[in-house]
Length: 290
Image 1 (cartoon, one colour):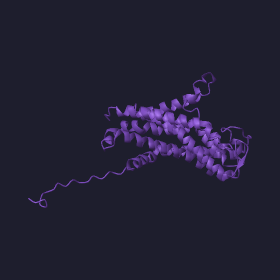
Image 2 (cartoon, helix red, strand yellow):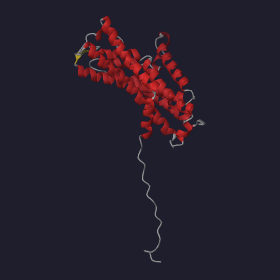
Image 3 (tube, helix red, strand yellow):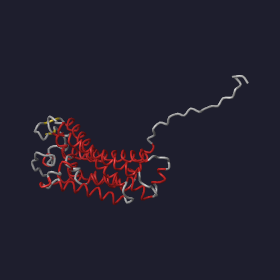
C-alpha cells in the first residue's frame, strides 16, 4: 500500500470554549425578576422621596454641620444633598439588609429549593458557581447604591433645584463636580457592601435556610455598628466590618485626601478575601445532597 493510499485517522481539533456569561445573566434575571426583590428596591428608592417631600413640607433648615451625617440643613438650598442624606440614612441598616438578603439567598436558596445539586450537574463547577454568585451580589450592591443616589438627586433637583455644591471643607464646586463626587461615594460604598456580600456568601454555604443566613448577616452588621459606638472597645474598632463605612465624607472635601479612604478599602478587601476563601473552602468540601 502506498503512502497515498494509507488510511489516516482524523483527529478533530478541539476549539477552546469561550467563557460564557449566560450563567451570570441568568443569575441577574433571577435576582431582579423576583417580586420580593423588586419590592425591596422600591422601598429603598422610596426613602429619598420621603425625605425630600418631608423637608419640603416642613421647610426645615437646621443649618448643617461638619460631618457626612449632617446634610439636612443644606437640602433646601440645593437638592443635590437629598442623595447624600438618603445614603447616610440607609447605610446603617437598609442597604446592608438588601445586600444580606441577596447574599444569604445565593447558595442557601438553591439548597432550600433543591436545585443546587442539579445546578452543579449542568455542569457548573463549584468555583464558577461561587464566582458568579458573588459577582451577582456585587452587581446588586452597586445597583442599590446608584438607585438611592439617582432617585435622591432626581427628586431633590425637582423640589429644591440645583446650583453650586458647598463641600464639608467650606469650598464650593459646580454641580457636575458634585455629581462626580457622588459617583465616587457610590463606588466606595459598593466596595464596603461587597465585603458584607462576601460574609453573606460564606454564611449562605453553612445553611439551607436563606432567611436564617440573611438574619445572621444583618445581626452581625448591626452588632458591628453598636460595638463601634462603645468607647471602652476602642481596641476592637479598627477590626469592625463597618468601621470605615462613613469615611466617604472625605470625598466631600477639597482637596480630597485619597489616603484617608485607603484604610476603608483595605479593610473591605481583607474581609472579602477572608470570607470568600472561607466560602470556597466550605463549599468545596460540602456534600451537596439537595
